[in-house]
Amino acid sequence: MIDNEKVKQVLEEIRPALQADGGDIDFVGVEDNVVKVRLTGACGTCPSALVTLKMGVEARLKEEIPEVECVEAV
Image (cartoon, rainbow, N blue to C red; front, side, top):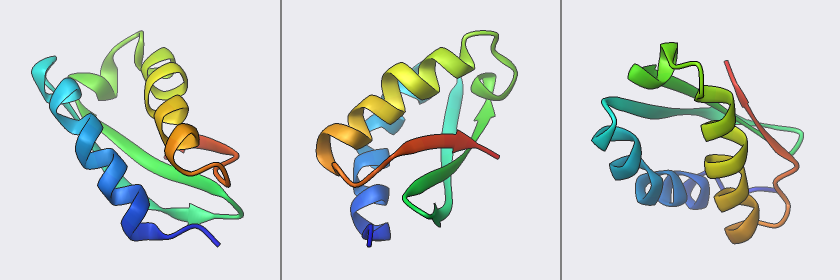
């Protein structure tokens, strides 16, 4: 089982980079080892949001929490 607090901690480490580009990320929950997040601000409408989500957020979460299968925007 994935610890929600650990996910939130990793997202807090990522948040400043997103905020520097005018965006942000909200933790929604974990379901079957899939982390659900909401990209907001500039990240919510950015054409590169999927790349940011997969190559940035998902990669970092998997590095810190190997049980994470993927990250999805909701």
